[in-house]
Image: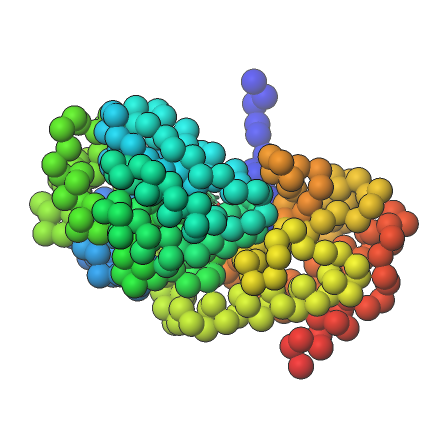
Length: 394
Ligand SMILES: *Cc1c(COP(=O)(O)O)cnc(C)c1O
């Protein structure tokens, strides 16, 4: 072991991948405030504000709306572990990486999975879902990903939730990448268990997972025949700390400073307003799209189904996609994402999430990408991307 280790000073990157996204300086400043006890009355007051702000972000009145003390994957697991009992039948929609993880969650909870699969890059097909619901009248849950970060496709959550309700099925909805960037209307959709993450369009530090449960879903959790297999994620226990009117007894030590950061990130969202935030994500997406298309770079997902905050685009012929990402990172301190699973090696994923969804980043990314691709003699049109993007802004 060396005697001295230098302080870790991370480089100043611009984060335009699939998350984490750039964190606002206001959020980083909140993170550094003095740690207090997780049962301190002042902290408990702040927890109530976090719950209220999350209700605003999720557009819900659900009393059970809170952040799980772990990343988005733990929010996912909270929904499945609490709602799925051994032998329960769950319809899982898969059109990318994250639907596959939902499937894995059901299996590990001892549930029986019925898969509804769609091509990567397309949305979840409601007709297939309806067929599956009709063929499986005993299904307890329908699970799907609203914003599939691995492909950039956004599914029609309102329709999928309505179909589930018509068939007496509860829903589990992944809104990790959508929350704050595109409309997530939990009450209007009638969704039952919805989870998200802090490091995508909320532009907060990674490591927390907001969740919200309808009263219907909470009843199911309270009336389980078997205990929740995970002690840490068992909502019946967690609610002793986070629940409304709870005595706030110790369950685990909350990540106090990260919760200051989430409080500030949600305040920023509220100041801007949900509608304004959605409109900003859409505008910057349109500008990036105009620039990329002018260059000759196309999208994976068809128009109308695209996520403005996650742009999956095809790598030009003959270009080594990993070399481009490396050159962007090393030469420009700019991070963009690689393709995952079926799309690995064929696409880039350019995020415009939260604080990072702004004009400066759009223009910077287009200029940097053009410079790197030109240096590699890639078949793109030069000198047109930034102008095409600016035309969208003016
Ligand atoms: C990022 C992401 C997750 C997982 O979140 P982590 O914070 O990385 O655990 C789950 N679902 C989707 C759609 C995501 O984009």
